[in-house]
Length: 250
Image (cartoon, rainbow, N blue to C red; front, side):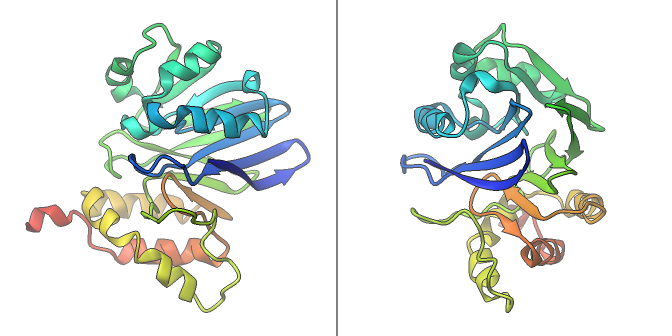
């Protein structure tokens, strides 16, 4: 895996760690935010890709700078590495939906400091930066959160926006194409995922209404490439029009 910058202003930075080398498990993105020497890791990945993520992280900051981790929901591709991170740095404070605390402890590290996020969301301060937990319940997990950095205008969207891309993909949906052709080619790799993994049109509508109120320059999903600039609006329009919960028709 490799790290690429997303945002930087003075001592406030965001990175994506992406394009894993292990092809037997689903490709996953890991994000890192740093402010004033304190760092947060978002959906830190599964057990199998931990060595790759850790090596990429060491290229951008010391693991000892990690103060917190955010786990958007309970899936193994984002949370099963918890005991390995805890073994490396037992000071990491783990933030996750309150509903999933007892389930996530099944991954190990029973004594790790877990902090349950209430259903309505809340705030987290890292290095003086206030970050917001945005409810995204049922997209696709029954207790699920996204995270918004209003200063950087970065929105971590978990599985919303995910695309299943082949090896060697870039960090971004092409931002240099004003016609939207690059977006159309990319979103073809996202359609099945969203129709099948997002079970509720009502939940989708609630999320769209929340997110359209935010000022977002970078919409960062857990799989695939980042939407930025005009592609953020293109994605929201596409997702709003998409009928989800397709397995119900089988």
